[in-house]
Structure formats: C-alpha cells, structure tokens
Amino acid sequence: MSSRVLIDHFRCTENVASFGLTGELSGDAGFFRFGKDAICYGQSASGFRSTHPTDPLYDVIRDVKVSGSTIKLPFDPAQVIDNLRLERYASSAIHNESKRNVMKVVRGAYYALRPLMPVGIRRHVQKLYLRAWHRKPFPRWPVDRSVEEILEKLLMISMKAQGIDEVPFIWFWPEGAPGCVLITHDVETPSGRDFCSHLMDLDDEFGVKASFQIVPEKRYTVSEKFLRNFHERGFEVGIQDLNHDGYLYSDKDEFFRRAKLINQYGKEYGARGFRAALLFRNPSWSSALDFSYEMSAPNVAHLDPQQGGCCTVFPYFIGNLLELPVTTTQDYSLFHILQRHCLTLWNTQVRLILEKHGLISFVIHPDYIIKEKNQRTYRDLLGYLSRLRTEEKVWITLPREVDRWWRARSQMTLVSEVGKWSIDGPDKERARIAYARIENDRLAYRLENRAGS
Image (cartoon, rainbow, N blue to C red; front, side):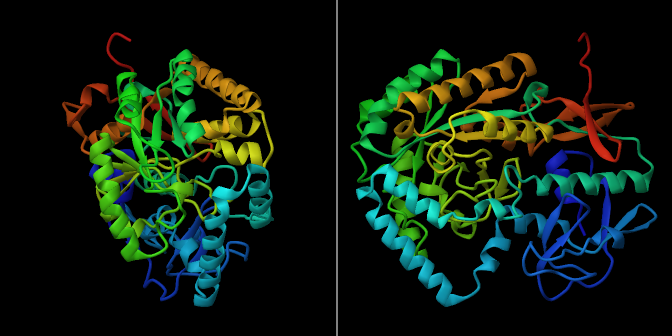
C-alpha cells in the first residue's frame, strides 16, 4: 500500500513511511474513527462500520500494527481520503431511489420559483429546508479538518515507528506564509453586476485583489467592456455556472452539453477557474470541465442546498483539475440564514484553518453587500485580513496564483546534498523547507532559517 497520500500532502521524501494492510478489507463501507479527531468513511479490516456518523463509531487506531519500519493499517488511507474529499460518504446516504426523485422534484420547483422570490421569502424557505443543521455531527462545524487529522496521525505513527525526531518537507505556501486567503465574488444579478466597480474600489482600498465569477447566460448582459475592467484593474474573472438555474448537475447528458458551452465562455472570458451556482457539484463529471481549477466544494455544507463537504482545508486534485475548496461560511448564509453581522464566526473559522496552515477562502456576493449594514461587515473582514497579512504574513492572493503555486509545489522534490536538504522543481525559489516534529502528541512545524536571515 502506497505512502503517496503523505508525500502528496507534505512533499516529503519517498521513505517517510511504508504502509501495509492488517488484513482483507470489508465488503461494505461505513463510518469509523482513526483516533479521537478523525472520522473516516470507507472499508476497513477490523471492527465494524456504522451507517451514520451519529452511530457509535469503532476506533481502528487500536488495530494499527508496527512490523519493523512498516505500518500495518486496518484501512486504505488513499481510499478514505478520496471518500472524504469527493464526498462519497454523502452520496451513499441517499441510497433510496424514490427519495432521490422526490428531492429532485422539490429542488426543481424551488429553483424555478427562486428568481421571483424576495430575499425575505427565500430566507424562510431555506431555513425550513436547513432546520436542525446545527445538530449534524459530520462534517464538523464550523470547519472540518478530518483529512488533515488523518494525514498528521499517519505521519506521527510512522515517525514513532522509525524513531525519527523530525521529518523535512516542502512548506505548504510560498515564502513560508502560515496560510493563504482567497476572496471570491459571485455575481448573481444585474444589481450585483452594476455594483462590481464599487466593490473593486472597496477591495483596492485594503490592497486586496479578488476573483469575480460571472454567469455568462440569461442572468444579465456581459459586455466586453465589463470584462475588460476586471483585467485592467488586476482582478480575476471566473465562470459561474452557465445560467444559474440550479439544473447544471441534474442530468449527466445535460451537464456535458452545458459543459461545452461553459468551456467556450471560459476561453472567451480568459477564465482559468469555474464555480457552479449554489455550490452544486459532482466530482465524477469534472473531466468535462476545461479549466485549470474549480471552486465548488464547501468544507462543511450544512448551510448549502447540497449537503456534505470535502472535509479538508487544502487544495486537492481531481484528475488534472485543482479543487480550491470554500472553507468559510458564505456571506448570504451569514447575513440571511444565521442573521449575523459580526466577524465572530469568520474569525473562528480563520483560526481553525490557520492551525492547520490551510486555505481560507471566502465567497462574498456583490448582490448581498450593497446594503450598508452588510457592507460594513465586509469592510471589517477586509480590515481583519489586512492585519493578518501585515502581522502574521498570511498570503492574500488570487485563485489563479494558488493554482499555479499548488501545481508547481506538486512537482517539487526534496534533495539531500552532503547532509543538507534543498528543493528541486519549478518555482523552487519561492519554496521553503520545513520540519515536522511531535510535541504533546501533536504535529508541530518549524521553518528552516534561510542563510543570512
């Protein structure tokens, strides 16, 4: 069994771990634990697998065995991590065909009427649909870090088995940044489109560049001048769905038909990235999207129409498409579902993500911050993020830059020369060597000091 999942995440050396299975994997898949903080979904070779995350969960950590330098695991880490990132655990929960059909009809009716509903009416309908969301135990609200917990636990077990104090690896972000921030703006209505220029002024006031996701058909007119303004001002343009009608993923043949049109608009608009309306998604169809990156997977989807969540705070590849997950609560949900106009939730999410040094990504709609009250909250957020950049050196950038960095990092390797580590690969000048060590049964990191620093 390959240690590829560790190498891909940490960009460490090939000999960091050697994994094997303790026995034959079960025929069924379900939920189980890997230590206190990591909920897994998949097959396992020991214990039992639960149908729901609310059921008692077997902890497979007790069945891990060490044979020399080889770690024998009762599950396949690559399978479990894919099941979380690609939300296979969520699709398995809707196994009844009649239930799926009822949900499809209800969703279709709602999105047919959605353009006619004022925000107040829409809010009440959504609250009814999302009732009891706060009682969902998985993914863990307000940020789920299950993938990172699994990877860190695996690395610690390997280090203990080999008697290693530190493991060198290539740091997650350029120049040793402790985390990364993305601001994205999904433009949904003509009023939102008309507010974009003012929103760029507001972002520029705080030295922040953002990506604007544009709906190419039916919602509003998209002129060449409108698109050129983003590019000339150093902002980014992405494609948002085709027409934002809620049906993009309702039928496979229809999706592939629409994907061809979406790809054409991507080339026309000079867009490298895509996001589906309302964060609808189906990773198994993503090969039809001719983009470099995609931004439709929420970390925790308790407040979104499509439930689930990718359970990670880092970018990850789906084939050759890079997924940049949405890791914070959207502004619409904050203002209209939770009815909050303060930074408390966003601050909590930022801190939880920074603890893992992950990607902090926001979806802020120009349509919903036209009102002064909402706009003040967004200004407060920009001020807070600007302080993080100044005081903690957090990297605030555009999605296309994260895409370029993560692709370059995925090709980097650690090289040992005369007892000293160096980095080889594209963009290596921006990369930093870091070391992972175990402190109080948790992984802690330190960056290597550069010469002269």
